[in-house]
Amino acid sequence: MRGVRRAAVAVYGMWCVSVVLPSAQTGPPKTLVEVDDHKLNVRLAGTARPGVPAVVFESGLGSTIDTWGAVPSEIAGSTRTVAYERAGIGASEPGAEPRSIRQIVTELHALLTKIEVPPPYVFVGHSYGGPIIHTFAATYPKEVAGLVYVDPTDFTQTDADMLAIWDKAGIKDGRDALRKAQEQMMGSAPAGVKAEWRELDRVERGGFAEFRSAGESPDVPTVILLAGKIEPLPPAISFPGNYDRWFQVNLEQRLDHFSRLAQRASKGTLVHTSKSGHFIHATEPDLLVWGIQRALSSATLHTELERFVGEYPLAPTFTITITRDGDKLFEQATGQPRLQLFADSATTFSLKVVDAQIEFQTDAAGKVTGLVLAQNGRRLPAPKTK
Image 1 (spheres, rainbow, N blue to C red):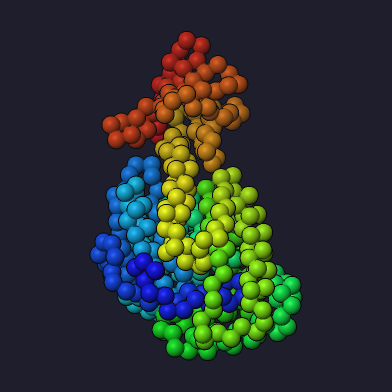
Image 2 (cartoon, rainbow, N blue to C red):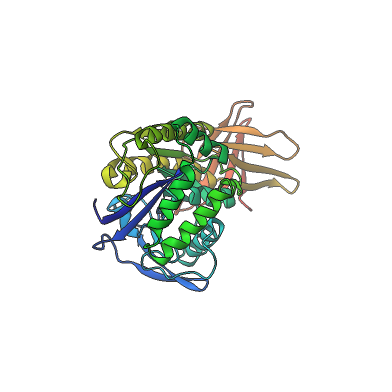
């Protein structure tokens, strides 16, 4: 495994719990950044580019920055990248607050502000990082331009869904037996890993409702990579039944749930790989790079359109308002209906309902400063005021 040494991988219910120990440092140097009452270990790479979202990596439970290997460096050729370690993990200091998913999201939001990496973001979440980036997107929808899930914990799962897996696999009382085995394995885990696992256990006992409490994530380009290769359990785990059968039933449900999630996104992609187990980014890093670049290419169009959004007064009582809905741009003049704009070039758009064209004016840096409405042989300029 490139860049990390895997200590243990266990499947607990529907989530994959990964405990990873760091090996030699790879990539750019790390920096400790103070957030609230503790410092978080961060690695920044790449350069921000106009209209291109930054990419933020969220690791699985217990995983350090190095779990991503060379993937962030590959992406850093296109945009700014942020990889970090949550409180109590790796070189990051423990936080005073319990490691709830909402607390993690709050700290991540504060961290991104502190290191001056502005939105929008494309988030990449592995394993437990999946529910975390989903919660961030649902909490701060206007700051998210894309989502890439890497064999994520199933944050759509209900308690009934989990019980259905055990029933279909024909394993009685398997949930309790596996929980006890997991508790034994976590006995020797680092304190930060234990703190996160305790929160996961609490969420599981609550029927996974906390994973869904933030609501739906926004409709942004979404890529989901699911692992289909079965991996042996660690020696410390004694599985209470036919593990191969349970894995297959589990996988069938994951494919069903995440297929629906991909279909809900107007630009959603699901890839099921039989070549990798849980750590897709270690065994197929090129697949993850492809997934991130796919999300970036779709998201860039959205963020590029955002610069046109605003108000353009043609007269004291007559204003053209430009809005965006996903990858569509709309124009609405005072007292008139909203009409969709269709691109003729990077800065010129036409209205199909009426014979008119809007030409956006930009400065040397590409910032939109105004527009010209071309209609009936007249050209009416308007500055951008909001």
